[in-house]
Image (cartoon, rainbow, N blue to C red; front, side, top):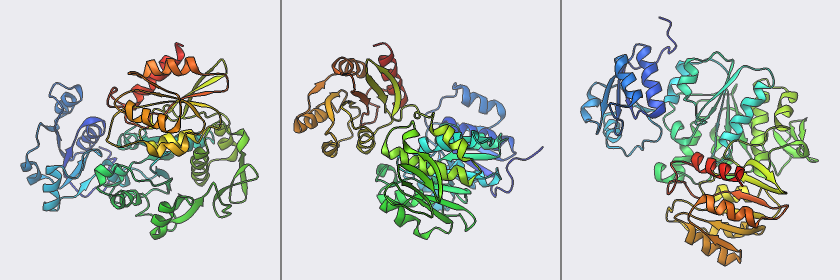
Length: 447
């Protein structure tokens, strides 16, 4: 058989956590002749994906994993979401068994120029832009990773000449010797501290994106973010900064109302369809990355004059009677909602609320100047109502997202923006932020 995984130094592999990633990795490694045991706490033997693995001959262990699984295993490839405090992982650590994520397989699978993108916010938008810019420049390209396509699955079948990866801190924490041709670090804010333990551990996970790069690789980074600037000091890659605030002639910058890379003009800001000052950072990062991998200015402009946003991320939904509706359901924390509010300088009617994680919302207060109505629901509705009272904003308190969307639309006047940007996770009422966003979109379209 033709082997697609060459030189991976382990034969006996334990896959911890099936879901989409674990199932794909189990299937691929089994097909490549590795000895695979797959373990999952919650999967059922009747699940179609579990049944399919068993039919292939993969050993599947369901329920609470036994420590005896470690006796015959040389390496663990875990689902990114499983914390390192998991008892089996702690036991593996004591035995010196390496704990990896699927990203660690990529160096043994592909040999095409790869852009890998990480950051606390903006990853999916930047990944999508970079992929589209390369595609419109007649490059054969695929996007994968945290964007929704399993990286190993895409890499296993890769027929393209370029790969663009969105990588989370969870994926990067066990990424082994992975190194992209171009790494991108968009920003760093305290996030996922329940998983990483503290901000330093989170930053170190992010630093894995450039840890193995050399001088002939590139690191594209946000020179406006102090934490990013500090973190990249140790990088060996050729560093390319970008900035919204300063003219950096060795990188990406804004001058005279236009975006530049070094001395080359990319596009006038007035021609860009995507709203929001924060998106200028994503656009600079993606334009530089795409250019480094062979995109053309024409291809980049083609994307930027038509692209209106990734679904659920400050996505334009429709305009009706002069009122514009935007879906920012991906704003699962306060910072993301602040970023969304900064994208508009017109009256905003903000729909917010969701899972109560115990925090207050006073951080929103300095950013509500142009919010003319607050429409709150879910577990956090009372806390968000207090914010409305403090800022003297008319606030409507309700139970459901549909109800608040209809109220906001009924109150809105021509020139207003109705913005769903919840500042909370969706799990009090919805399975995920995508379902929440889809319900908002459906409600807007039935107004």
